[in-house]
Amino acid sequence: MADIRRVTEAFAVAPQINEEDVAEIAASGFKTIVANRPDGEGGVDQPRMGAIRAKAESLGLTFVALPFSGAPTPEVVERMSNILNEAPQPVLAYCRTGTRCITAWALTHAGQGTGQEIVDAAADAGYDLSSLQSLL
Image (cartoon, rainbow, N blue to C red; front, side, top):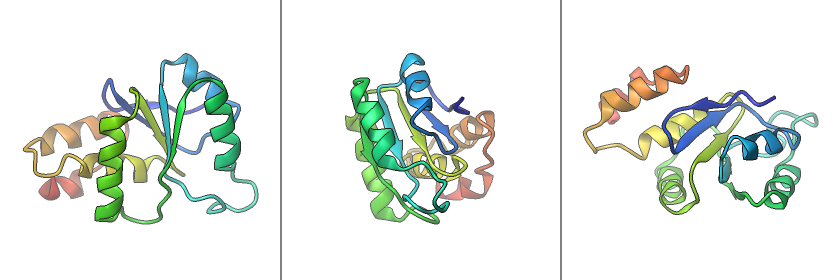
């Protein structure tokens, strides 16, 4: 069972999912899955994007691969912003723990004057982004 953490009505994050979780994700109303974890990062036991993509698409979900390691680069933030603006919502993004996903999501809001709201939404989902507040 996936550990889905709602951040807003349109966005949620989860630690690593597998292909069996996709039916639950679809049943929960998500329309798009974003993979922020590179294949193989966790070794041979890590579920692969291809299997997750195939299951998602078989259930009518949109699947977007945006894998990255470490802190999101400006290019990753821009691509995440585009995905969030264009993909069917709600969107579920996953990585190893969800931290990469929520950090990229938060940075898509940088400069919009919503820093405290973003930090609070992340905290409600179980992630401490207070160190990013000055960037938001």
